[in-house]
Structure formats: structure tokens, C-alpha cells
Amino acid sequence: MNEEDFLQMIMTERMQMHYQRYREQHPVRPEQLQEDKRIEQAYERLLEHLDAEDQKLLREYVNAITADIAKENELFYQAGVRDGINLDRLVKELKDNR
Image 1 (tube, rainbow, N blue to C red):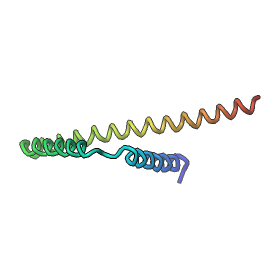
Image 2: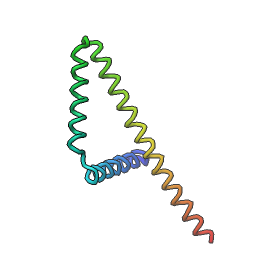
Image 3: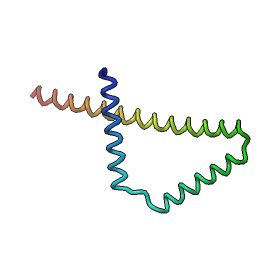
Image 4: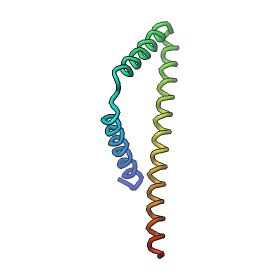
């Protein structure tokens, strides 16, 4: 495992930890679950009115948007981790130069 793979593994584990902690502190409310279910059902009804090719295109579009959002979130998280590491190094350097 190289350094980049190791960093990726650590960040993935940390993101999962933070998400789990967030869900524990902010459980999904029943009304939100109900709204999510309503939206999903509406999406499925919409798909039923499309032919197979259009269904496939719409699903691919939704999957692509979801993947883009996930990648963007991951990039911001990684940038934050790198900023934190750089800030830690800078503070240590400033302390050492006193």
C-alpha cells in the first residue's frame, strides 16, 4: 500500500466515522423518511411512463449527479484534511522558531 492509498483509506474511515456520529446526533425524523419515500415513489412512477431507453438515461443521469456530489464532498474533505495537516506543521514551525 503506497502513501496515497493509505491516506485514502484513512480519509474514508474518518468520513464514515463522522457520518455515523452525525446520524447518531441527528437521527432522521419520521416526517423526513416519509418525504423521502414520497419522492422515491414519484420518481418510480415517472420511470413507469418512460420507455426502456429513456428510463436508462434518466437513471444514468441521476447516478451521475449523485456520484459528482459524492466526489465533490470527498474532495472538500480531503482538502480540509490537507489544510489541517499544513496548519499543524505551520504552528509547530512557529513554536520551534521561538
